[in-house]
Image (tube, rainbow, N blue to C red; front, side, top):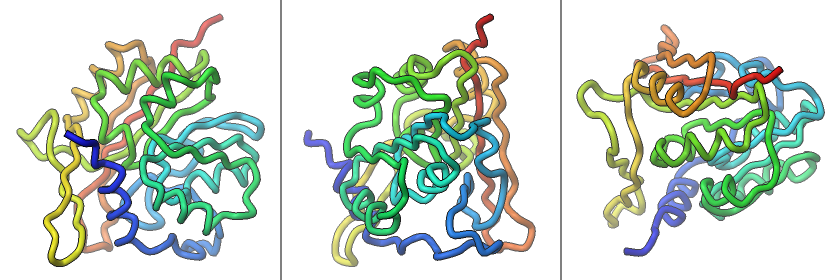
Length: 228
């Protein structure tokens, strides 16, 4: 069966507008972990400083990645969708330090000779890749003390493991289907710990009280073992 995930995410990209010109604070770049605007923690969760390197798994149209580049990081992103990457290049043409790759996140992790001070995924490839493959691959690319963080929708109670996500296309076309992996927070904590991550946290950040959409955001973090 052909891999149609790139086409699915191209269809998704075509249905979404570019990121807003500014956020509620008037900033032209910003980091957002959740599906709710101007909500939740920011880039500080990654414990980065200028000059550090960071990898975005499923960088999409590049908003979070561009923000990290403006903070002085070497900001590397990978995404399956050429359409998403085209939007990133169109929106952030003058941002230095941002490096975009088209392809499979697991392939980049396997073939890269670099380590990254942080690896993250915001509703990205870590959500749509088997964690038994993703987690050890991420750990290999982190130095001692390096941070991994990901966000995604919380699992529906009882609907755990590999699930189906439907990506809308045109009004006369059936949606495309991609796989995602859903688990409760305690399972994510156990999985990251079992693969060698330390200081693991997995929590559901509630939706902002003033918004009609009430689904929160699952936020998972862990670090590679800190060696002396």
